[in-house]
Amino acid sequence: MLSISMIAKIVLKNIIVVFCLIASTYAAAKVEDVLEATQSLGRSIPAYFKVRTFDPVKWQEFTSAFPGHPVAESVKEHLGSIQLTPLVFDRDAVFACPFIKQKMRDKYDQSFRGARAHAPSVMAVNSKGMFDGILALLEASEGDVPGFKASVEELITASEKVIATYNQRLTITRGNEGLLKHLLGKLFFADDAYTNSDLVSMRMFLLTHDLVLGDDYLFAEKKDPTHTLAKSLAKYMEHEGVPATLVIGCGHSLIADVAQTPAYFADDFLKVFTGKTFVHSCQHCLCDHEHQLTVALHEAGSRFDYDGCAHADIAADALAPTFWDTLVALRGAGKNPLKHIVDHCYIMDGLNPRIHHSLDIGGAFTTYTNYAGKIEEHGFELQRTQVLGSRTEYIYVKVR
Picture (cartoon, rainbow, N blue to C red):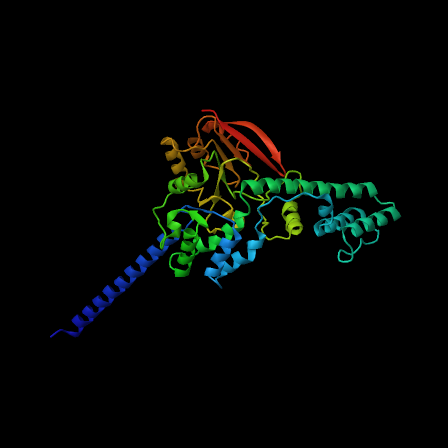
């Protein structure tokens, strides 16, 4: 017969074993959670997809197939905002735009009012009424009439530049693909993208109806942690052609900066002038390179978002060593066609050696950051600089 002390030891041992099993199971679960977290799409697993068509009828079929789903409803709401045809510049139409009317009043308030009377109410007059009203106030008080007229002319000229730049980028980027990609990103990059049967069905609908194409695993029932940047690049080149330029940063922007235009003027003006919702606040990309490949930059804690990277070609972590290892390996295999790498994210410092190994001699590296004294040792020479709005681009060339 066991003594009380022996029974106590056995019970205690069993408790310890059970506790260890629980702790082990908990630890394993936490490890799986950590592994799963590191396999987020667009970071350790690159992701490429593109919109195949902007045919409203086909997209309406998609929204009808999944009525009531937030993404389908958002797509339905914004279909009218997709613009494929260039804007036609009309000086009278621009002058009549409510945005210009408000800008005229702002100019008067900031520069000419002082002790003078208030400009007409924005709600009470049209653009011509605002213009004539301010001129009358300035003439009655010996104000700067020529200065005000010149400022209005500058606004119209700036608007013309905005429209011209927008039309150019509209042609290059096949319309407002960014808006649809932003909405579809909620299907491809949701936390439950592979456990929610509705999301899986919606992605498969997009594929089978030839609305969207991209990496195969994006349309599967589970994510593929073995998917590589090389596979995304291969898929990109299969559908989009061979890129000559790689842009690290936000990617294709319909608006971006227009030289000699005040900050956000392009975005604000087009929102009012067109009455559409496709205009976004991204002001980063100044590129119009032919065949450029844009890679969205993901930092710790960031998500696939409209302003961040919805209008880029590939979502990936461009700060990860594996990203650059892939480009180096492709170059070694003769499959890396890049002749130009553009850094529009300001945080590529320390990656100069990897950039060097990703380019052949004669290849160019463009950045907003002045790397003087840091990049020469890696085989680059400063070729030239150019001022774009409030930024200065530095163009380096690999010479050895």
